[in-house]
Image (tube, rainbow, N blue to C red; front, side, top):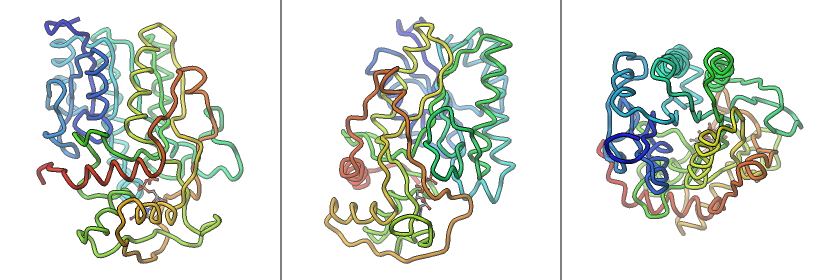
Length: 332
Ligand code: UDP
């Protein structure tokens, strides 16, 4: 416990899309969320629920300072580059930023005696699995550098558990979507690469059209299928994961998805219905690094963490994203 009278939790990437929602959930659960963020892809305006400590994960001295100042009981580690396409063009940035930054963070945790971490991993670590159910035990075979960087960090966490007793909850996210139901926070990347915000850009004329990346996949309508999960549900799982660690339950991996898949075309159709607007669409080639289909096939998070998605219907996710889109005032 620190001078605020609340237990501090260090939130790397707390100014980003998911990290900022996590800060809101942590505050509501009685913790002090301390954002550690270099504000390269995050937004100052998204840090509303606790202090901001600007810094880069590759700056060990800065990390040490922040650990000493707040003595966090745990780390929620969101900070990462997460653009699949970019990871194929510039893999070095993913190894430097995601893997190198996480290594530095773990070293700083060991030095500070902080031994609990909730880590944001991804279904992209599974890769193409043709008919295999994507549960936590399936062999990870990432096909892009983003997924490879996240799998490497998972391996690193296992090593640090053995050497230094670092306990980790690893969440393998499926596709995170939606926005804070109270429209205080939402998804805004610069440049934007994610499907639903890009659909909204096309709807509002901010972009001429949404390009569908590939229409020749082996799926019923030829477009890729993803399992979308609402960001509010996702961050609720993080609070449960934090409690899991604080209860001493130890290392565990959990998928976070709903088990329902939607194709790119289905997301476009649902967006048309929810917003009652046309979506200008053009069909383009496949994007390098995209898997055909990623759907969670596990209920471990439900059975062991007691997590159940409450708001992850496609209509709620697009509706909340659309509400946020219309009030978003993050500075460019
Ligand atoms: N997608 C698309 N057009 C776009 C952006 C994304 O067709 O402009 C597709 C992409 O190929 C993938 C799905 O939408 O099948 C979700 O992509 P996103 O980048 O949102 O998340 P990812 O699955 O890469 O984590």
